[in-house]
Image 1 (cartoon, rainbow, N blue to C red):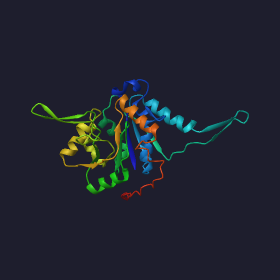
Image 2: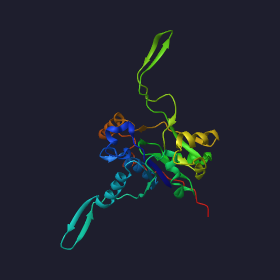
Image 3: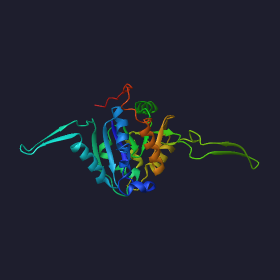
Image 4: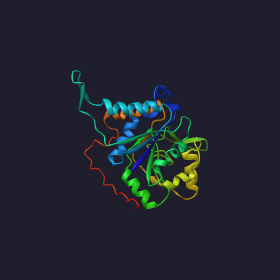
Length: 271
């Protein structure tokens, strides 16, 4: 199962961090948020990644090159001109780092990956959000719906308290609710190759152009996720995620728990 991660945006709302690195490389618990996202997919045996690069793409390339070449401990024998690596952190990932343009919009970035994705179902997410969504259940739901696209719908925490007003008088004051009122696109999408029929150029937005037209054609399903979800749009979001990680209560950190890996039902490819 191929997984697209959109990692080319400039992260303008997180400029405290993104002037020095691209947003997917902003760290939570000493690891880039991109690493957290990939570990989540890998838990469900989705480990064939296509990362759409743009802003500071070389920074992301450098991270993976260093992770491959420099992880673990090194023993260097200068006389024998040999290097021995030990305690290497091994991942099963196949990582494809694809340049998709500096100013390309989200739909255009996906369109530039068409040559890799035109023959079967694939998944897609953004490089700045974490969740504990069951990706195996999401894929199964998508296939049962038989639509071109499925979006994971989430209800983010409300940022403000609420007021109930009657005739100019506050009859009820509510603290911030755990969940907001409406469903939003939480990323973690599943697509059929027909999605490319809704994309035309670099200036296409995946959300405003493609998904809105897919929905108008009755071809967009919604997988409702009531569990944890959090994007990292601002420095406040980053600190919030860091606090959860440091406290040992990060809900998205499911890959190193004693939970059984979910069984994945793969659809056989056509001959």
